Length: 259
Length: 303
Image 1: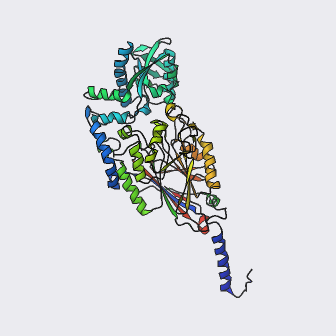
Image 2: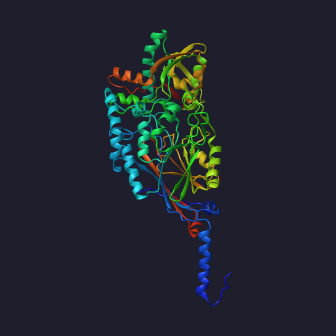
Image 3: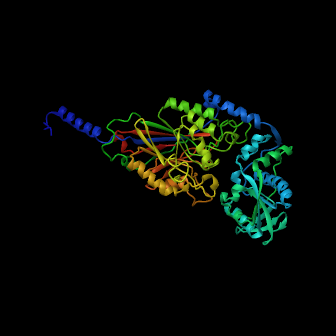
């Protein structure tokens, strides 16, 4: 140790300084976080635009645009995905699947679809007011899922209804209406306008993703028969848009809740 | 518009924990500032929304995102660029080209790392694998066991970056696949409990690998108000410690600002998510110091 002399104040400081410096340099020099700042930045035209990215994207965009920019129909108002138990997007999708699915199902099996149930998460975007193109069908339904029809009895349809009540999501629904009472129990259950019967077989249209247990709609597996329509949901939309002149916003109440 | 500011000082203990280990770098780190930028659920949205779109008129677009990231890199070159999954599926670009363009553009923007979202399985695990040559960045997932799949050894649990002397450990977490993704698409991928895996990862990266910063790249979802038992980023943050940042996805959650949450040790940590479709970019700046005299004050979080 350095022997310090009381009167030598400058040396005293010097030694202290050395000791301190040695401790710091040979001790851990791990960087430690002292301050964190966080924010969300909107990406809009203020950001500018990368010409390099534009150059890469262009041939891909040209190919897609050439195929998909065809205007098929017109939407007088925006169809939305917002709603407690049903949405204008969901109503349209389920009604159209019922109508176009039936074309195949009736022809092949001589039977009619009673109910269509799809999933809210499967509708990927809205239909904005204005022209409706083939592209819109791709953006609403980008998945390659096809329509299936399941034969199930009234008791299994009740499981479908209870799933609805438990999940509290506005899944697209057509052909089935009911009211949820104050205790969270379904009543006034009508299939194609007629009271549900436990033992009766109903034909329920959905897609292969949900049939295979997607979104935990496990009741579909209890079907007694399954019919693959080999008809993609996206193609159903495209065919409908081709046939339709204007796209309606359907607002009839399919599921209501007593407060 | 003036940004609302919110400053929190945590216990001095936070700052001290990282320091107790000798024989580390004698060299002074070159950088004292790291910028983490992140996206999630871009879902193949490459072009901006049209000006007439009722929800997001004229928002997003990869060319703009690239320009924005470049301008941030000019301001601070020490950037880590991350994505929290669901790169795929949502526009015809994916239906036509299977994710090729998405990966190529992310590589051009110099993404460092991504985790896998459920929709990244949409063309099957093989469809994802087939596009990997187009990605000059890697994927991490710590709770998907890919051992019996084609991704074995390709998607690793975590990756450690040396960002100019700042050691950053990033691990991935994926959402439960059963009931969400068709089994024909995820095949033999095995899902493990994210909380147990995250605890293990946080400990490994912070204490074993001695990372200065531990980041979780999650596709679990921000929060499930209708299903409070379901694991989410907010629950994960509260159940773990040693995570400096959780970057999330899946729920397409737009936040006004990153969320500050108390972790299991009572220390503030951050959960953030940047909405979806490339409309937002999340930005978290970490400032570091090695001067002990400044460290006793702990860390301040300004959001």
